[in-house]
Image (tube, rainbow, N blue to C red):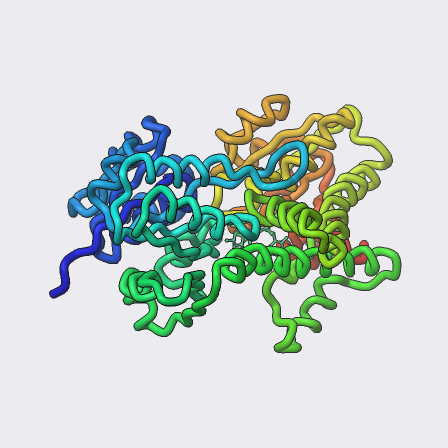
Length: 442
Ligand code: UDX
């Protein structure tokens, strides 16, 4: 048998923690590094600091097997590993929408300063603007001769991160021709490649663009169907039936064609803005001008939901009891970054509504950033006395609500289905007035 590869994963946020655990699960010796020592201590104690189904079990299993350790020292990573994955965050700069590369730069400089050895491979996984990899490669060439760089974007989705990492749709390797990076990445990902995962080997820039292009496409698809919902609202059409009909064209397909309150989270909104900002810098801003409209349609889905609720309440939320089911930006996640649900809840609160929020996982995070909302620990408590109920995140717990059983708890049976996940016929039969964007009232 070949010797076990030693890997380091720098940055143990959402992407890094998942990557470190999954690489250990594949049998490699992995060290996860983060400047936040509290974070690495929690991980070393077997605790995942965010909600991700299946991840904690695998973390504990691999800690026990001794394949996975955590540290806050890059020197330790440089000492022990021959492949280093950079998985640090690339947030949006509040001023320009451009990407803040501070953490990527710090990780690269830190590896060099710690004495990165010749023959080691540095693999960037963070989402970065075009040109970043080439610049970092230049820095490695100067500061750590003989170390190589590759760009290997990550496409994992929150809520299915483990599966997406162990069984990705495709692997993209941005490499410099003639180097050893491709062969080494093929070794790292041998298992999934053997199972049939396609590999696209390309240059740095293409690898960088694949990630933001994929997210721009997905965002566009969602905004497309939300734009159709606006058309349906003006014409009396039904956007869910429209989407079902479109989806049968295999060139379109059913996924990411779910109309509703739109996309949120830590990637899609940030990535489309960063992509535009980078295109502007490069002088090709007009090529991505449509993403401004994609963003605008997405924001309108939120304001239109607020307007729908306001209208259903007879003109004003002031002093009215409002129940919001859902706070996370999507189900199976406790992530509230740019959450459409909390945006809508906030708008109704600002308009004077008494807003009660329930979410199966995201309330601790929501409390920190939206302290002015009222939180409850169950659907029943959230809807007690409500004059309107809004379902804004499609948790299965909400899909499975029995509208007849819920009816006696509210003071007025009005529901807004912000994600098109409830069956209008069933809710109407149980005595509810059902509203959703892009669908006729009855
Ligand atoms: C996304 C990409 O899918 C992933 O490949 C990338 O690596 C990171 O960004 P994620 O942010 O975890 O992943 O969530 P995703 O499942 O893509 O959903 C994004 C948002 O779009 C959510 O708010 C979701 O509710 C919304 N959405 C999705 C819709 O409104 N309609 C849809 O049809 C699909």
